[in-house]
Length: 312
Image 1 (tube, helix red, strand yellow):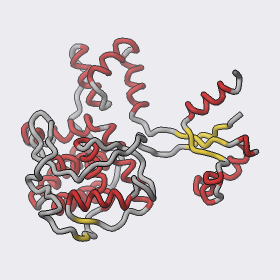
Image 2 (spheres, one colour):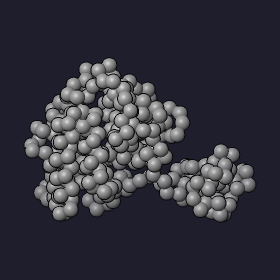
Image 3 (tube, rainbow, N blue to C red):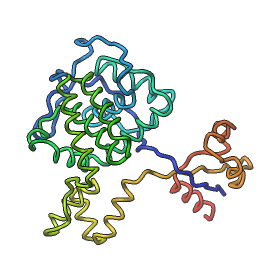
Image 4 (tube, one colour):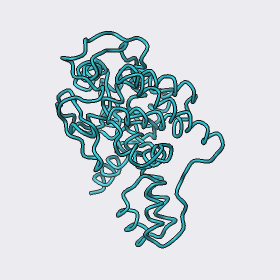
């Protein structure tokens, strides 16, 4: 029988990547439907902007911004970045070059992990992040008409400050640089102003969050914003599970996925063998156990299925 050893790793949703072309995005319309057409307002196509190396722009933020646009407008998926292959960092930097017209330094291992974390987290918390961004804009029309790339940069900055608790002024500085280079100086000034407002209200513990009050519909909309879930889903879960259990389920949905190492008993490896080897995941990788098939990374639900099969 296979043995599972719990292992906490941080992964975004894994799905098959589909080829997508460089994005050329028009201005974001009021109904959030953005056409993939001729580039406007600073998001230039490669034919209009000379490809160059920019060492000042944060590589993981540039890749994250372009990847988020590919997911939202180009039909791409939020899968895990690998060192080699179709989802590699070099391939992602190619998308940055073809979309924004410049490259940054190559992605290292830390950058790859940050891209995975930021892209997955920004997608999970998008409704919540958009609410905060809108609350710090002058009016709703400013948010509704915001350019796609500018909005992605703000989402990244808000996620890093609010959810990852990164040093706020470093986040502000790096995202301002990205906006200025990828768009124009005025866009950088806007990012600077909005992110600095966020830092101030967060430090004062005065984020503009909806309150749980009013009728059931109003409370469902508030919960949908607070926990970044569709309103219809919140209403259904609240109806059948009750508000408290629905909140717990939404919190679990937004948590980082947990995976396990499965010992391959067919090759004589036991759970205890893995425990002895597993001072860190790097030790298992260096020992070649994954490559040799002595163990594998697996979701616990798959292990439960194998456990059930052993009794049939």
